[in-house]
Image (cartoon, rainbow, N blue to C red; front, side, top):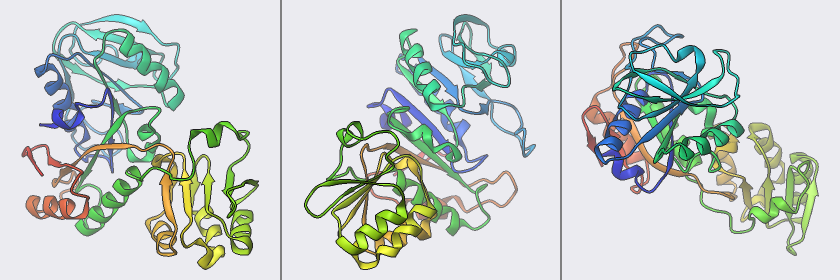
Length: 338
């Protein structure tokens, strides 16, 4: 059961590699299993979910089914969509294009649509309110394009959903899923910690640890690469989002990257292509994170909304082989897992 994988975590983000990856099916399973264990869950979304057909692709989607007592944080315009009876538990003051985010409590079993705030800071506040209203577990619906959902400050863990709708090429889907999991599962930094950020002004994006263990603040990745190339270094902490341009600048340090640690705040900050990430690792650098993200499970969906389905056994086996053994892989529809 999925419940066994989320049991240690109070807040879980459900993230899809693409639309129609099976994320809503996962969310429905999680809600149902929480109630089966006597828990009151709460849910919200960083986008919109629960509609009968995808507003972008026009393809059919499963709807979100909740049970009496579920807390739902959604935009005001969606309160009357669906067939669940409800009471207003709280308001948030958080605006969306569909109105203020309102917290309702389901007074009957039924269908809902959810659309929550778009900012991670707002999600953190909203999560605290949901717990204060009695939620035992909070689910945050999102997408890989909003990897900030996987930030440890937003959710304790995440479930990644991958499926045939991502690409006609199953090998590409498997490889990109494995890369997304690798970024979400970075090991903790051996050189930097939260104090490294507390001691530095917010404007300092690049913090280098030289060979003597002294901290040096730098203005750019180009400056960091030059310092590493000429004087060497033990590690480099990059604050905020890390793009391909940062990695490409660091390549100028050449062989001096070998043995270095490149640290980021958490895996969600890495916005880089697999080719650049792998090139940095091949150069001998170790990519680490100040805070680790817990990857509770990966779910697979062999059915494509566009008709290009995968063989379910081949897809499941390929994803299982591509991921570390410690990461559970689940076919939620078939309810097979390994």
